[in-house]
Image (cartoon, rainbow, N blue to C red; front, side):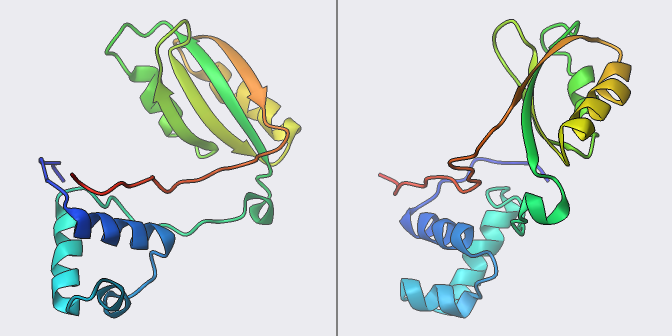
Length: 159
């Protein structure tokens, strides 16, 4: 799907806020909250999906419930040249890697990783990351406690 420019109005912003809070909400309930007819809400949501504004609908899963309690961030220095993302694409294929960010500074990438425990993290680093050609070094930060972890965006009204 190709992303094209799409100007969002205040109603689009409200729809996005509502859907971020509860992606399972039905169009009738959204239309009730916004004082619109359900068909108009459906049309707007379809436009937001088709334009790539809404990229998917996801369930939030408690990491501890699926034995992925250890959260780590790993800074990765690579031999990739600027604009080349060979290593980034290989990192993105690893199931434990939740996010891959191409960052400014000495390190080339920052990845967010969830594993079952420190043994799982060591295994990931030794048996997966260590085998990716182009990685020069890593620097790992283990999260002791998460105060806030959010996937919803702060959406402000259009001007």
